[in-house]
Structure formats: C-alpha cells, structure tokens
Length: 168
Image 1 (cartoon, rainbow, N blue to C red):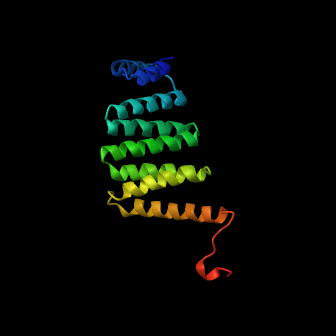
Image 2: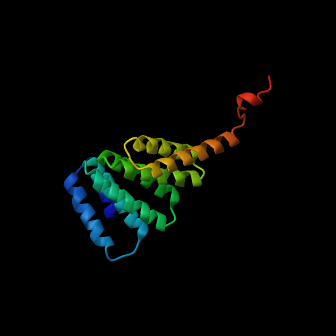
Image 3: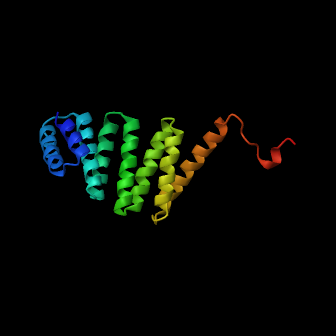
C-alpha cells in the first residue's frame, strides 16, 4: 500500500509526501526479506532523487534496484534499471560509471535477444565513453557493438555482400 502511495505522490509531485512515504517503506522493509518489494522501493526512490536533481543518489538507488532484480532473476527489468543508473550517472558527471552501467545494460539486453534495446544502450555507452579516460571499458563497448553488428548482419534477410563478392 505504501508503494502505491509513493507512486501517487510522485505523480502529483508532492515532495514532502514522497519523503515521508519512502521513509515509511524503508522502515517496513527493514525487517523483511522481500527483494521484489525492495527493488520496487529502490526504483521509486531513484525516480524521486532523479526528479529532485540528486543524480548520484538516484544512480545509487537504481544500482540497488538492479542488484535486487538480478537476485530475483528478473533480467529485463534489471537491464532497464542499469540503463536508468547510467543516465543518472551521466547527469551527475560520472562518465566512466555511466559508460559501465550502459554497457552492462546493453550486454544484458543483447543476451536476452533484445538487439534494438541493446543498441540503444551501446549508443549511450559510446556517448559516455567520450568523457571516460579508461580504455578497457571503451574497448569492451566497441567489442559488444561489433558482436551485435555481426549478429544483425547474419540475421538480415538480404545481407549485402562485400564489394568484391557482388554478382553483377
């Protein structure tokens, strides 16, 4: 019930009610082990912090949500949470963390067969890579992009042959 109240407070943008309800939710969940509810609460907290301009706290909440969803084996939702964390880290100016979250989201979506979603995350990772001075994550993003490109080419109904292989 409290999670619903948080959602409603977010819709009407009642910041004080959101704070109170989130605090009550955290208190209620402290003594129980229900990862699905904890994940939902973390996501709502991330939404609130993002709206409030507290991007680092939003990213950390989305990271918690992703970890809880992973524990519950809810991989599509986990990948989306990682993408949301990536966006919040980008807004916070943490380019390398942003790149990492977008990469992890893209890799997960690709493993689940969501090529389109994966490419969106990889594009965001490439944008974050511009401001990240670490070569390894940048190389990992390039490798994943190439792997996705190869799968898309292979599955294309009419693959375009290389210029030397054309039948004219």
